[in-house]
Amino acid sequence: MATNKIALVTGGSRGLGRNMAINLAKKGIDVILTYNSNKKEADHVVSMIQALGQHAAAFQLNAGDTRSFDSFIRTVTDHLKNQTGQSNFDFLINNAGTALYAPFIETSEEQFDAVYNIHYKGVFFLTQKALPFINDNGRIINISSGLARFTLPGSSAYGSAKGAIEVLTRYLAKELGSRGITANVVAPGAIETDFGGGHVRDNKDTNAYVASVTALGRAGLPDDIGGIVAFLCTDDARWINGQRIEASGGMNL
Ligand code: NAP
Image (cartoon, rainbow, N blue to C red; front, side, top):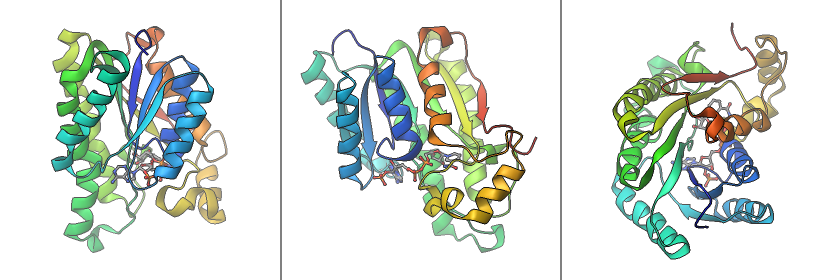
């Protein structure tokens, strides 16, 4: 593991994070991934990455519980120290998250707090606590959403939390440039995963609506996203910094 670059992908057990983890491994990058409750799926992704010839491990993380971050970072860095002799890694991909669909007028403070903690506060402080262990010239990639650019009813809390990490990403790029660390946002459109109960994938009306407002005429697939994140971790992407890259097939243009 000593010579390979290493990525930490939150929420790598399913959906977009799993696709990112596998695409990173295909580029010769070792992967630490996290899951919240689905250890079995996470272990499956670890096996898939190992079959590609890369090192991989999975650890539990609740991305909305900042009090758990010190012990999570210790677990990851102890693991790396055992495996490689040093505690550092190269790429942090803040991907983990759950959906909330609720009209603004009905959104409770509990729902707001849950979304804010996972999608914004958790990203802020996990990145802060990971930073001493991210190698110089490393990369931070935050996963936002098309819903931070365009609006659909029912996503006021979620969309505004994603908007917050887009602004945060520019500040990270500015403040971490002195260490050669870049920070970028990837903003997927609606993608067919388990997200939000799998409604983009499983609800025919939703899927057809997404296709109808997308220039390329269909909903997105996990494979449309993972390779972009993997590319951002290559040397060819070294000059991309502080950018929002939307990958939505041209949704709501
Ligand atoms: P998904 O298929 O539902 O997978 C969610 C992943 O996040 C799983 O690995 C899950 O772990 C993990 N996770 C969920 N809640 C967590 C928590 N509280 N703490 C830590 N990990 C947690 O969702 P996805 O579609 O891949 O979404 C990934 C990211 O893309 C999210 O940030 C989402 O907002 C964003 N996004 C998705 C879409 C879309 O249409 N799918 C569009 C734009 C942006 P377990 O397996 O253990 O549950």
